[in-house]
Image (cartoon, rainbow, N blue to C red; front, side, top):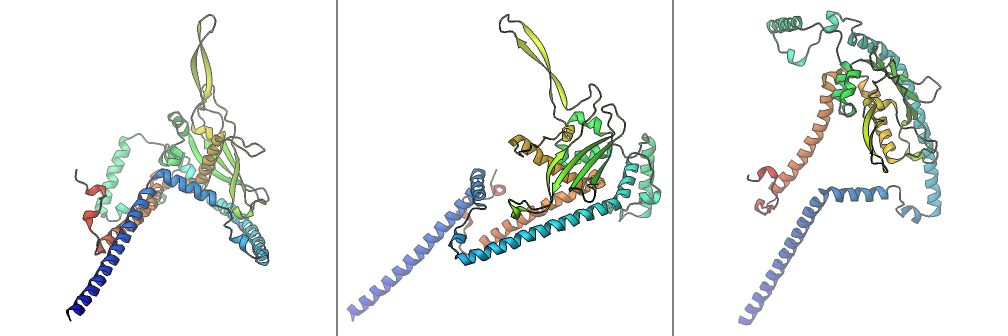
Length: 394
């Protein structure tokens, strides 16, 4: 009986050992997984690794996976038929965008009288009536009639103390300075000139003409140049490329042309004069040489790089044109239609709100991860080697 009991006990001990080994294997596996996750998280925070990964992924775009080659010939033949259908879809999509362009032209004519009146108010050619000037701001909604009257009297008193301004001074300059994309182009010597900018208009190409649009900058008479209007024209393509029809994703800007600015003598802010000293090799005498070189200025916007017939540009010119296309599109789509909101900053706040929402979503995801850890019965905060920065003791 004793031998039987010992045998049973030995079998139980072996079973217990197997359970222990299984638990240890599971814990070891979890440790490996946790370390792998931590290592992955650290790698994904390394900008060099991310850049290398992105470059690798970019290299894979459009490369064959091998799956198509493995298909039977008869299936490949049918896939080719689908691709031909896709080309026809792209051609129909191009027609769709052409009609959208026609609609843009139609509604631009309806918007223009409103934009013309905006220009007249800005340059003091028209004084809006009291009815046109009524606006119920959010902060005024809760004010009593007595408080409103008091605020009105205070504003009138301030206006009496100040010199009566004409129109809305520096309207477009303020718009430009409020928008990062445009303010990055501005130099200090540009500002006195842009104070004379009275209006920006968008003109679409005529029916039947190649798709394009022109930005027209209207200036009042000034001491800097004699032009009343400066123009920038963007030519667009709205049809699939025959060599790569599947890349078509709507109209794209292909090129742009500026205009000649007739600068008053000594007022050209796109050029600057520098003095350099030169030493004669033989005699050792020194002379001062004056040179005229390009200068950073917003008005370089009207002299974009020319695209050669080959279509090939150096990297610097490509970068300048890419930024130029983005600015032209932004002026057309956002600035001109909503100028007053960029003047007041309301449109900028809306843009910032979009970014804030993305940030809040990211915070929510982090919060969910933290909640998952806290709900994990095996989670031990003491084992967390990298506590959040705000939790570290100073």
